[in-house]
Length: 340
Picture (cartoon, rainbow, N blue to C red):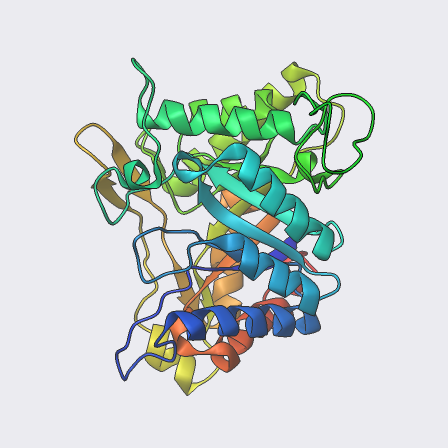
């Protein structure tokens, strides 16, 4: 059995060809898609976070709104760039959204990805400490968030407060018990996956990672997942960790599907460079008739290793079409693979 959700980048553009022409469209359609996905029986509604772009950015108002409109579906991110985050304010916002959702938040966080502007986190008021890289800063913010999510008081109370305090040191409120175990790290390399395991975070792995061995993407990703699980066991954590992978998967069910994605299935991976030093491998997408799609997905080692699959959706094609895309996988592909 495998949990299956969707991952939306929340793009919008004023183009007449787009079904999502404004930020208001992107937000309202995200809520509607999450509600519809829950009705279909999907397990998760996840959203990317990008700053300085015509995409979804501040996640917690959206997550809280979805939490108030749904009842069972997991609600998450993939991923929040921790270089931009104040860990204590984030803990308050996440706690509030999680309480509204009844404990359904699954927060994917990371050090970030290539972005629209140069060093965008500087505009948000953050900069690395002396001798620290921006990636180091993102991991430092992460460790601070994980610490505050333990729920232990650390702030000295005012001896003459406006309102009565509970005894002892104080913590950010509202606090949502259990959220600490629902934090995921978006790892781009084997080393950061191992680091996440040591800190007790779940693992998110997308269709992009450092090309560390020259092997096909799905094999490298499966190796990353195995390294993560080994490090988790060595760290002595008592709970079972969760692992998600994301994929672009389209079952060609009708003429709409064939028109949009009939020629988009990539038979192979792609190689590129994220910066001057980082060679990256981009995993293939899948688009085929259900019978052929099932055969292709059976060969994907990383999907087999993961307990959660996130389907990246073309949000600008509208809610109804994306419901169709998700439903096709849930009904015509997942059962044959033993995921349902």
